[in-house]
Image (cartoon, helix red, strand yellow):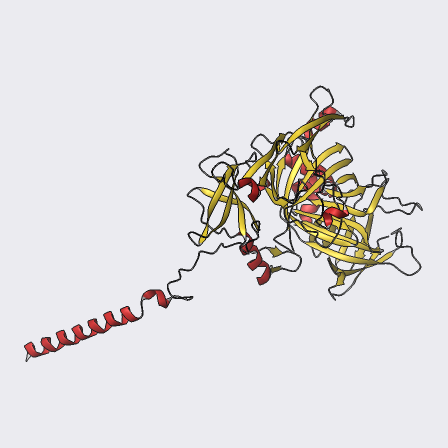
Length: 533
């Protein structure tokens, strides 16, 4: 009886094994995965969500997908290679999008950033690396990669700018070799040819000039753009004196060559103060904190265009044409004349902006902005130029009306007692606590706006111990930690009071949000401030 039982069990196990084998043959494990039969899912690049601190929301699904597609590399990098930037474009006009990928090797700490070209190979019916070359840059966080018709003959040039380990600005330019130049000589002529590689301890910029209508219509060549490099004038005792080196394209050898040197005298600034500011990114960040107005070519202050630097909240605000753009302050790198900032738009996370800031005087800066996405976002404005520190003198308009962004007053309100200090700090005392931070009054489209940026919150006991003086000035600001919050209010005054003076006894604050769509109310309750007697 027992023997028959084991025989039956053996037969059942054998039959089940046969059925399992047949099932695996008909339905292999590859079909269990999603997608087409036999297709192995590609690894995805996981990118941290960018939080909009004003709304508390992250970027939407479309932005995340666009960003992932922009950063996805078509061919896996080698061991130890880390991507720094990606440029996608159909350079061959074959309906296949090629890639230029900037990467660095982790095994070489001070090694150069490399650029590799990934194209479609019809022989293998897939993408592969077709060309690679080193560049002059070595700091990944400073890399800007974009293409441009630099020469004017409609050939593709790719520009990679950044900084090296010596703190110098670099620019490496490659030109895609035309097919007629490579015909029959593919082994001798590379896909991309280096036409310029510059290094300097100042700044480098491409001077884009307007091209003729014939060029725009595609019936004639355009003028090539010159390259300007600014560096220290070592023959001068003044640290601020510079030399301007001009490079122009030579069609005979296909290279950019130096064509001239011009001395650019700088302002005479107290040398000890200059040495304190330059070479230290943290100190320079503290120096540029606040509002800077654009200086027109005629030398006048344009209060309709400004840049607001907020190192504590790690934000930079660009305002022009009644549109405000907010960029997240990613990183700073010290240069000989100032700092080089890498920033990212908080609304369009695929848009990065590189800001080269140089000290012009103790109350003025020279700014050069480069966007790695070659488009105008919201505002058709050039941010390059000189900027003057906001202050009483600069904030007077032609009629003499005061435009000072700061006041000195104490107000009572439903949210507590709020003190505005003339150095741009404020304190809000309510319910036994004191909230402190920065504030600024500014105008958008004829309307006055107040922005409060909280830095820290303390008890009243702490306030009485440290005193009000500890909260104002550079020392108080530097001691405040954390990113804080930003609150924006529309300021309204009684009908019989000129709003520019801010000298009345009351003002009403209405919570708003300022963005590309202008000023939008959040429909929260208004706050009335009454001047304390």
